[in-house]
Image (cartoon, rainbow, N blue to C red; front, side, top):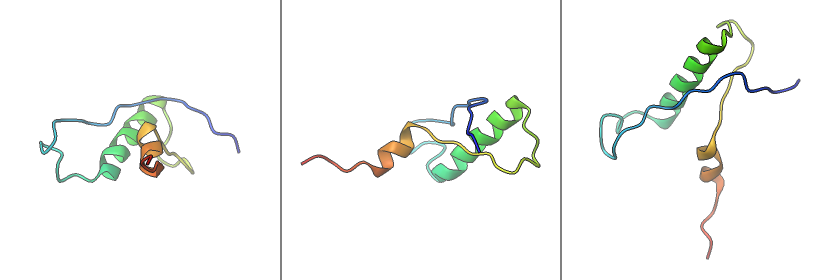
Length: 65
């Protein structure tokens, strides 16, 4: 099965320790994915819908010594 980009949405952001301090990053990401799917006209019954971004790559990087 091929993967395609059909829409994009920005995750909510704010200052460190601000309004989103108690909201898990996965919840913020889910909100952006949901909004992108709505804007692309993807039905809620779709078998799969996901997202990713630069932050995903940063999670797996190790500091250089």
